[in-house]
Length: 176
Image (cartoon, rainbow, N blue to C red; front, side, top):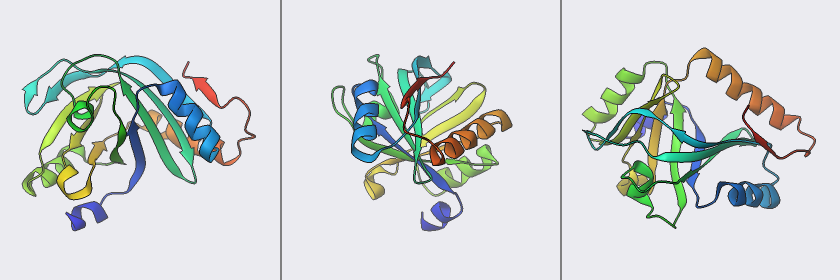
């Protein structure tokens, strides 16, 4: 797996949390992370869980940058099987995955499958593919691969730039 990890720039670190607002506050208070941008009651499409068509989890998500690392916080609000519940039962949370934006999603996913890693969840969000690979036995968390379009990539880069110059005001912002 080392060579696969080295070939992909993992820049996102995600935690599954119970309460997205409390988690944003905790990250802001403890580390000064922010500003956080959040969305509530989101759902992916074309969801597969362990190679079977599945109901997508409904989730709340928040993004911020801290020291160049993208922090993602996710809370699942429905009780369906998911990559989040594979690591943490409802009511529990912790570090869930490292994420990488890859240029050739299908090829990179195929490389991980060929190396023996199971895709535990795959879906699309805003017509952009993503999946979670089960690396929990080796790493204690999963890996997420996604292929952002230019608009999403540009927006996420702007969040990183904003965090570098942030004045500490308005730490929690709902996506509009």
